[in-house]
Image (cartoon, rainbow, N blue to C red; front, top):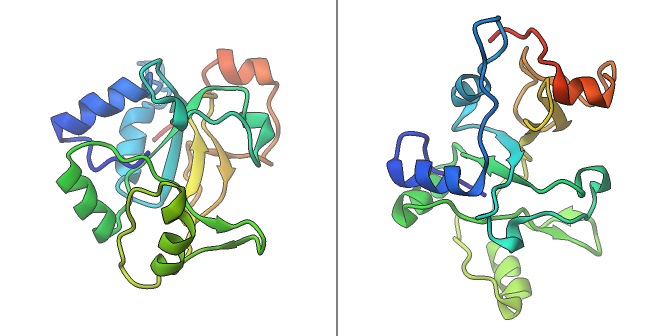
Length: 185
């Protein structure tokens, strides 16, 4: 789901409707994830949050390529720093459901807006904005449903001090969910 801003009331209401929320810090030196995330956005990150019951069913991921994340009902929130995306979001005044497009036969990103429209228009694609051919630079995906926040796909956004990479020393799954780690932002 793409969002335009933290500051716009319409976006805040919509984001709080579809996601349960950002983990909060405390006075014990634990990271205030909301504040940390605000420093990253708009930018090349997608943050995974627990989905609320109001999230449209077509947004809930029930499996695909990352099966170990499929059993949870999560939503990815992204605020791209792309001028075209920002303009669309500003006009819509609400978050946008969006996805990247891969050619399943060739396992490559589809970048040509005409090819995307021709391929998916008959299947119900709402619209394509023709901004010309674009570079396929995937965002860094960070799971905020675990403590500490874990990078599940390294992309354009760098790993920050309050994030752990998936291949960093694996913590016991129960510890990740129940005991806050001392992280500084």
